Image (cartoon, rainbow, N blue to C red; front, top):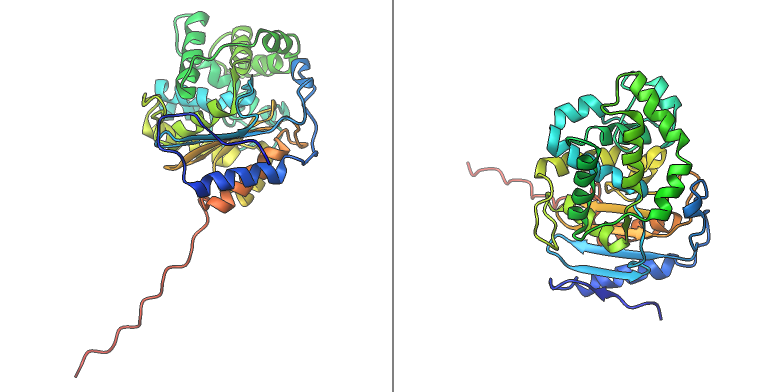
Length: 335
């Protein structure tokens, strides 16, 4: 028998059918051993490849989780859509789009070639170039104030106070030459809005915040719930910001595999190199998975399989529909 399902809030629990689907997804894929743990950041290389957790947070505050859903891991690229949401709320959608862009690159998340090939340079806030530019747009009188906004904003999404893992931060700082290079390249093109070194450090810090799958599902549920955290009832960002963030997630959330993701799952989602995936079903639920082994594009293998399983079984695919019942042909009028 697999691990039990935990209820972690005072809200009414999910229906039994939802719990059944959650357990099915976990049991169906926990023994999949495909993929490799990311090793280009030394602090991530030692993650146990057997770890696997799934969490759901509904828009009315229900929480259910199974497996390693309460095990902390660094947020990494999963921070990108949420920092983008904070910037959208602060500077407005048109200014953010002009500064960062919203179109997919079709290339790897850390591609330098994408910066050089596209006139807008940043392309979208979910690849590293766009995410670094987004971080440079966070308002504040100085770097300390901007960091306070990022940390407090992501904490509001998660519904609890998030802290940095110092080991991860140090490890990434020692190995983030590529991101520093991207920041200087953007600066040279006039597409960065703060000093490259300060911006890279802020971005590295935001990636080093620690979350678990329940936190991540809660963050997804904020986007699914029009900007209100369903567990704390705090408004985090505006309804319009959520709509725009979900649109960008749908087009670029899993980098060059986003088309495959939508084809299989049909929901906006975002992956992270530490093994997390967050998915939002608008008006319904935030879903998160954690499993460190990644495919060649840097997306959790078990996470993709489990999310697809739940999307299909729960019927939340945005592109799925049943034909309408045909109406009878009207009879001719008498006479």
